Length: 317
Image (cartoon, rainbow, N blue to C red):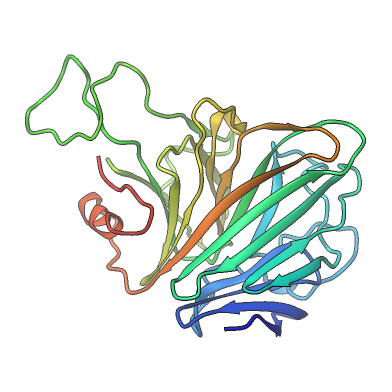
């Protein structure tokens, strides 16, 4: 279907990309921001930030909800430069390109490209950071998707491999025996391992969004499997992203992070740390998928069944 100009959530000039299965809506009045992603005519899988909807201008940073592009590592005020101004937009067939004015104080310009598959519930995103300043800048692209409340985030564990000196013939394994660690797990200082929102499984790490628990919680991992997901009701949001072996990632080696509080949950992917000379840019791609009518469970074997046939996942050990 052709890209439409629509009103959405208090913003007047939004662009709607849709096919028979799924739709995405972006605003051109702030951002770049994706406001909506979900089944055509169905509920929004992304968080909508209530009183902030439709806001424009001003010097205060707003969460707005939806999906945004940042640059890591996180710091105030550098990371929290407001994106309250209109963005330039270009439509090329079924592709939309959104370009933000250069950030005051950082010299970084953010750009986001979206292309919706014509027949599949699949959205391709390319995030681009360009250094428009006068000196080199070290950063990592950071794609943050804010999910609607009431769901569960899913991060795959790395494939199981037995200890070289302790193996049993009945133990399923997808990896060679090794003495070395398989991944890094980063914990923020405000994260409690006793928090009841956690669920650790053999194949997955789960984190539940609970509107009754306001305390923030965040973790990050080195995710070589290259995907994470968010289940809400009978619907599932899944994103794919890259891992570069040997690259240096921010936040103690994380390319995948999850944050939650009482209002929402964020599923985030990050690219490697990069030093951009003036005029240089870095890109970070994600692939989004929407899946309907899932049979949801928090048990390991049932989850493995849910994810083993989904696009781009390796849900097994």
